[in-house]
Length: 331
Image (cartoon, rainbow, N blue to C red; front, side, top):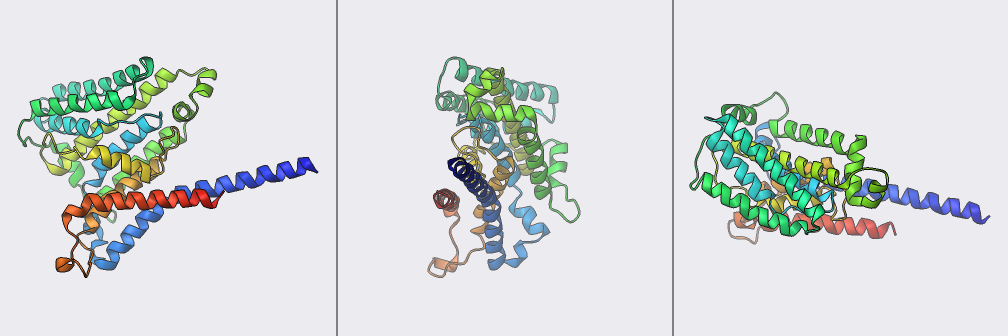
């Protein structure tokens, strides 16, 4: 009898855990739908091919930076330098890539190597990642100012063509978001080595006992973070057609917020590539939505643009509160 009760209890716990994962996984998609519905309510014409293209134009660089942050968070670490790194990549891309692409490629490859070196220092010297990446943020910011003291440069032709391409039916930012989410999901969630990489943050001791190198896994995740940071900076130049050393300073907080909205937790190993991309889209749409919302008690009925950061923070708080409520409801 006691055995049957124990089996029944384990079954109930598994079902409860499964429901909780399902609800938490659906939260980013639900938040995206709610933002789209709110925009449609105030301005139906914004939910169109060109409207989505305009609103999500800057979402792809943010989504790539969010994926980079998520890779670091998966190892139980945090990257405070991703915004400065994206700015550095943008300056290199706009300054050197059109005329000397080999030099630009070497500089961007060097940036990824520095990311890998940071993983080695964090793991072998047991230095907190916050300290290492905070120092790196000043390093990247200084290099960016040296490369481009004043705004300028020009986007390479292939980046302008890529980001300006208008496929039929589906806006280009939506297509790229689906592509990014699908590729990262296959790498980290569907491959056997992806399970090892995620396990480094969740249960490093078990991964080590299984014979996998923790150092190697962390270096791989930081290399992925560097690669996605490079892609973020390049696409940002493709959208803006020029570069500025300070053009991505807000990306550090946006990437953390996007990853958290998408389901990532500061307890390593709990990530969701699809959710992270959706989280970045939600933040971008929440920012754009302020142009459409009508609030009667405000002057002119419009929400000031200065409130964009506040609106993004409010979305983050609401989604985290919903996640806490889901967790409590299942207990």
